[in-house]
Image (tube, rainbow, N blue to C red; front, side, top):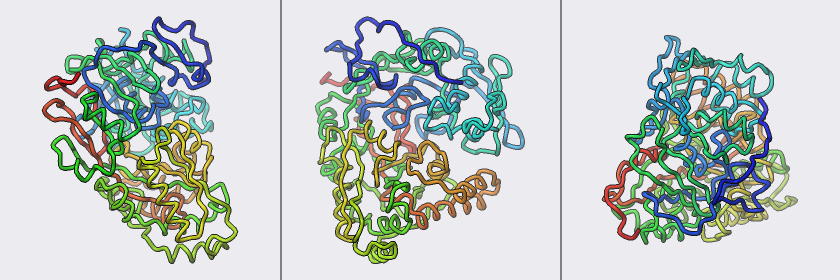
Length: 550
């Protein structure tokens, strides 16, 4: 299935598109031109500008938080613990061998434009996400289906061979290659959400501009004003609309922590979702406040190495860089939010796993490895470019502070020359995808509570790998773990893969395990619950009393 490219007539009245956006992907084109707006029922600081609202193309946390309320999957996330609960599917059965699901889709599930949502819509959406022409970064989330990986790689061109078929208008059969205990969690992830075939076939890449835009979730897209906000409005046709309390929700584009916290403190925003949007220098005082809500988060901050470029094509150089990172110093002096130094990629609280301590602070060993690679004290090495992002080039932001600290460490301990390359987030993501870096700031929040969500990132061909590294040996461990039914044996296979990735190949250098942090006033906002996946369904949030400043 190829994505059509058809121009979409006129912009709806009251909308405009900036000249600079004309060459961007469809999801980044909408903008509202009215200078004044009626107030929203809830205002959330969402972070950097979303890159796309297409669920198949959404990659960043900011993207996913907007697409989740617009497009629903067979399951959705429970607002308290983010576990999978019925979404567009009201029920399902699982075969005794754990490989075949049969979903019953709700007969009252409709698009926001009134048409019924059927099993054929799910089938189309999943095939589209797997189609390599779509370019879905999370296509691997569907590789657990029979023949899905082969279809995505072009080895099996027939989409009918995929392990999913419609059994009538409201029943769907899904056949998995192996039992997958987290498959229902994946069904709640945006990549597997149901998208409107009618709009996509009519408008091609620009389908997100369609007015009215058919959505399957609890909210409709009211508008997207670039560098300002995404406004969502309650979907009157959503199957669970009676439990969706808020009529209008604004997700603000604010990446500067000082600006974000000022908006919150002055009552212009109700919620800060990200700990990185709170000034780190204030965290010691702020953590004790009743509107601060810390929680355990399955997330890791790490450094990617571009293994396609010398000298980072040598594992000894990569290991030297990782061994000289003083992780304890970074969490104590820079982040200061309860983060823990990371010796591996998988956080300690992850289910079905025992976190490994695969790398420690050992600068002497790092210097020996660098000398073995032929670069004693950095002699003969070109400058290495470290890529990171901030909003508005803010050098006081946390990513910038970590970058400066790493530059100091590597120059002091290894004699290297490090050039800092600060980009806006959208440009940063593009550069990382194109391997236009030597070393790059990175982070990952679990998509589901299993070590696979962290380790599969670096499988060959994974759209989120972005290191240029591929290893048949690593891939074999992951495949064996997926096929392994004995929990202890599966855990051992994944642990071998992680050790190989971190300690031997050093493709990535873990820095710290992130802490979760939200700010909201519990006397004003209800239905918002910290959880390990940091997923907070908007349709579960309630306003307990009005904000007197708005």
